Image (tube, rainbow, N blue to C red; front, side, top):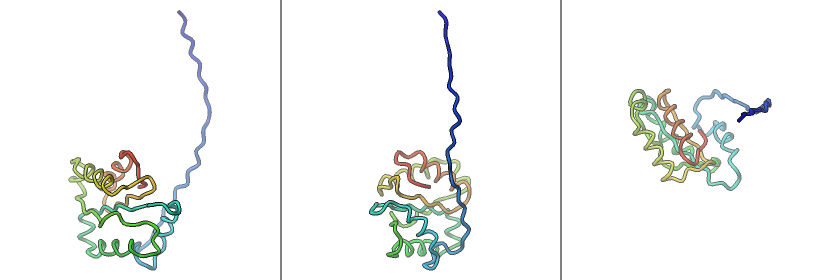
Length: 144
C-alpha cells in the first residue's frame, strides 16, 4: 500500500500591537493611564481587577495597598477591585512552590474573575512569571 502525503503551505500574518508605557504614581488620581487602559473593557461589563504584590514591594512602599484600594473606589475607574491586594512572596518562594499558583487559582474562581477582568502583578520576575502562568492556565484566562 502506498502512502501519499500532501501539504499546504500558507503564510499567515497576525498583526499585534505591543505598547509599553512608562509612568509614575500609577494609582494617583491625577494619573489617568490605568483608567484609560481599563476603558477597553466592554461597556456594562463586570470587569474586575485582582491585584497581587510581591511582599518586598509592599514593604518598600507601605502606602501602596491603600493607594490601590482608594484608586479602584474612584467613580471614574471603570473596573472594580475584586478584593484588597494579595501580598505574596516573591523570588525563590514564588518559583519553587505551587502555593502561589494555587492561591491565585482560588482567588480567580472565588471572585469571578472572567476573561474581561485583569490580573495586575507588582514585583520581581518570579512573581510576575507566576501570576502570568496562573492567568494563562486558569480556565477563564483573565487579561494579564
